[in-house]
Amino acid sequence: MHNRNNKYHQTLFLILFFLLIAYSLLLNATIRYVSKTGLSIPPYTTWETAADSIQKCINISVFGDTIYVANGIYEERVVMIPGLALIGSGTDSCIVDSRVFPPMGNRTITMADSCLIKGFYILTSNDFNYGYGIYATGQNGLITMNKFSNSNSGVVLWVSDTKVYKNYFFNVRTGVYVSNSNSTIRKNEIYTITDQIGSAIIITGFSDDYHPIIDSNYIATRTDGIRKSLGTRPIIRNNIIEFVQYGGNAIDVSYSDSAYIYNNLIIMGTGIRGIYNYNVPYLQVMNNYIQGSSIMSPEGMLVGGSNTVKNNVVVNTVTGISGGGIQNLLVQYNNLWNNDVNY
Image 1 (tube, one colour):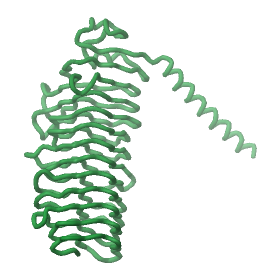
Image 2 (cartoon, rainbow, N blue to C red):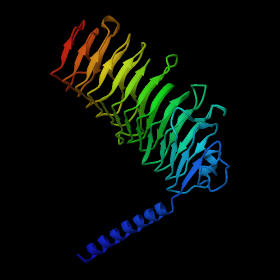
Image 3 (cartoon, rainbow, N blue to C red):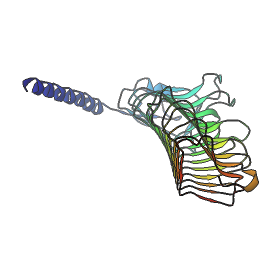
Image 4 (tube, helix red, strand yellow):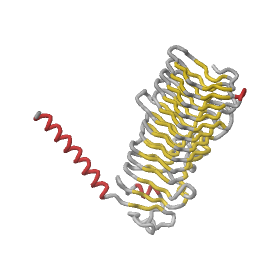
């Protein structure tokens, strides 16, 4: 009993110690400014003395600081420090543009732990084979209310648990690339470019221990809408996926197991599938609405063994639901109508 009390007090002391450190850091936090019209006099704590470069301001900042960035075009690559809030004046006129740099390995903004990025228009590369708008490797971050274009990937979450919320992506090969991450990708609008092969959202991982959430996004794409590659057990729900041209799959899942696809609205174009399961056992596909364009939409969904398929609606396809494997396949309460072949 005595040892248990000692461990309790030691744990409580450590918690209080770290809370005290965090509180002291917040007390020392500073608001700094960046503007093309500032005098660029350190420590950049007024608009009059604002830095003329985002990176110049970051270089003297510490954990907990907030940097406000005024209207202008900032042709630079930005590397953040942990605990930094970087807030632009809006996506119409606050632009970070790294297209002047060599495209290979180009990252417009590199994001660290516990950071916020808000209110920027981010342009990266004119070569869609290269370039990342925001490359996040830290934890507990938030990327919100930004606009992305001209990149291979607008946002890359690499071993990063970061929330990507209410951003706008257009003229990109991939909107969000999620790797080894438990991030939430929610309420974004993603329009991929029509002359490149890519996916609006790509999910991958080295193991099945990751559980990203892809929720309530609007996607208009030429090829794959949401594509899950190796590893991870994502939840894909409440998304609207619309194909403006033909090719690919609205939701494509492969390998690992136990993915969840709920409550999605899929408007299919020519020559594509709605939901395509390559090799995922224990997949749950429930409450989805899939609308094809008659003979031009070959398959509403392809499911496999040990999958559960309930309460879905599939209309106007060549084949409503196909089974790539039937062992332990459960298909119940679906409404299939006006397909050439329902099952």
